[in-house]
Image (cartoon, rainbow, N blue to C red; front, side, top):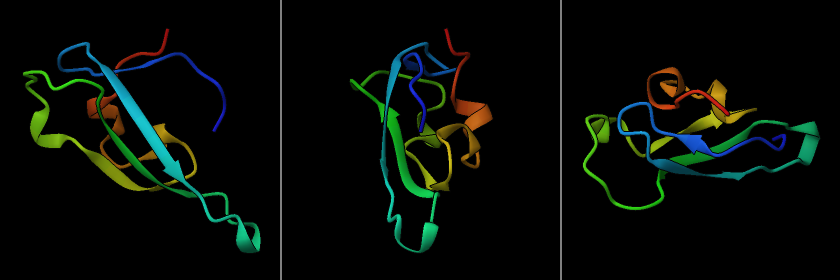
Length: 72
C-alpha cells in the first residue's frame, strides 16, 4: 500500500480506517483488508461497512467505489 491521504466515506464524509494484513510468502502482494468508520456515526452506507476482502490495494476491494470517497 502506498502513502495517501485519509480515506473518506462517500455516504457521510466521515473518516475511515483501513487495516491490511499481508502474508508475503511466495511473493504474495494481496492482503486481507478491513475498512470501517473511525468513529461510530449515522451513515446511509452503514449496511456496506465494514468493507472486507482480499486485494492488492484498498481501492481494489469489491464495493470500494461505492464506499470510498475521493482522495484529497
